[in-house]
Length: 124
Image (cartoon, rainbow, N blue to C red; front, side, top):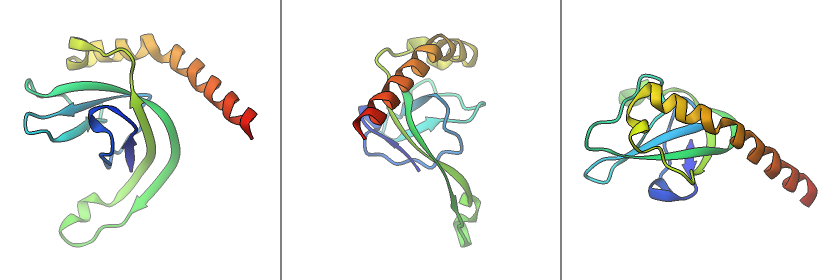
């Protein structure tokens, strides 16, 4: 299960198949929350896009579903995300621009994660 610490998706658990470093979360006009975790996912024109960054990936969980929902069986990441400080704007609607936006922030994400781990290790 994927959980969100803050932002519009706070408290909304989603069953996503991937846990990328950066994730687009969309909110539909009726308030529904979903994430664009697959490489070929695209937002609709009316969805509001919010960017989140990976905080923790604790591993995978296997869900065995039978009956009507057996298609939901599979492995899912147990990940936590937090709202990104800067948001992509129109870059979030185009796959190539979204990838470039993520790549431009990846190095800072790695440094931030190393700093968090160092603080965590120092607290123990």
